[in-house]
Amino acid sequence: MLLVLMLATAVVIVELSDLFAAALLAGIFSLLAAGVYLLMDAVDVSFTEAAVGAGITTVLFLGALSRSADRERQRRVRWRPLFAVTAVGAALAYGALDLPRYGDPLAPIHHHVAPDYIRGTAEDIHVPNIVTAVLASYRGYDTLGETTVIFTAAIGVLMLLASAGQSGQSEARKSTERGGRTMAEQQILRVMVRLLAPFVLLFAFYVQTHGDFGPGGGFQAGVVFATAFVLYGLVFGSEAAQSVFPAALAERLIAVGVLIYAGTGVVTLLLGGGFLDYDLLSAEHGQHYGILAVEAGVGLAVAATMTRIYYAFATLSRAHREADR
Amino acid sequence: MTANPPLVYWLVIAIMMVGLYAVIARDNLVKKVIGLNIVQAAAILLYIAMGKVEGGTPPILIEGRTEVLYSNPVPHVLMLTAIVVGVATTALALSLAVRIQVAYGTSEEDEIVALEQSGL
Image 1 (cartoon, each protein chain N blue to C red):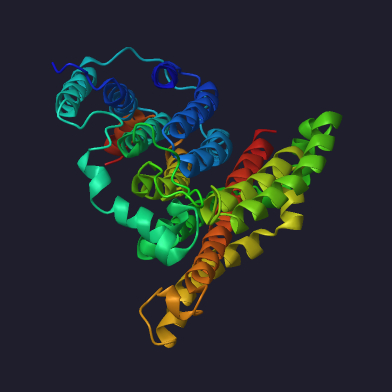
Image 2 (image 1 turned 180 degrees about the vertical axis):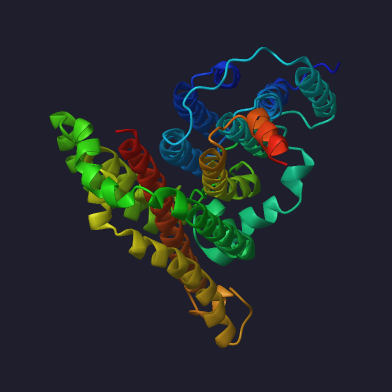
């Protein structure tokens, strides 16, 4: 069972003192998690986890590790934390005995709001993907909040790393080609990335615009979009990626994305309705237009945030490599 | 013990506890962040597991059919955004770790505490 594999991977990750290996294993852990979500019918979640966990998070860890020690000091098992963790685990396991049976259709969770959403999606929203309908329409306020959290986190990262990365930035520029060359020399990698990048971007647009019919939407599309630039940056150096999608542009697009989302709400306010009340946008397809507009904002904000954070971490590792020489 | 012990939930709890152990017992800051990510994945799993309906299909409406059993879409929506927010906060935690490394020259928590106390 995949969950057992996940547990085994988690134990190995915690035990490894080689942090590089642990970061790579964390990517595999994410991929396993994506498989489990898929088996549990959460296609949208699985899609997101596969793109995020196995792609972007690993790159971020590697970027951070290039600046700190890549080995952890070996240490023995600590008994007090182990005892505390076992006690908490036992308490939770005891509590789990009272949970409804796994997959039980009669569990209370399936009888409160979910049936309304499932019925209402067909009747009021007219899009097939219930997850998208709930995300962008029924619970549009929450999603606006989540988008703002991502925006805030991006600001935090940029402020924290601004001074750390600057130290070697001017020399780093020259060393980009040197640092990137090892990978850029690999003919197979070069050709593959060149061929793949346009299709990854195209797929991102498909996921973005098709999120109301199938699994997908702004969050997934944003991450897939950023993956294309991360892939390109890993092989050709992040400077090359930045010449296509400049960091300054990404910074602005993060704000533009949040603005499009909140702006849709303001437009419906001006039309005389409530905040994010899409029915006023058009008599027949209002909900559909509203969802598309909001998802576009989410996609833009997520893509720009992920790409910009990747640039920040890439600059960090480059500055460090230069300092080593 | 009930007739059917909730094995799925127990496994998820076990994964969560492994992550929690890394957060409490390890001194390395990057390792702590990895541990936090494991705890997060387990929390997401717990929600998704509760949304599963036996014999259900993914919650994407099948046109023309009304008597289809769909899995619960609500946990999916919540966890979908949680994952993306999770990366953003992980990036924030890692940048804090990097800044601490730059300021103190180490990522081991006990060494940082020792440096702090000797400085005062």
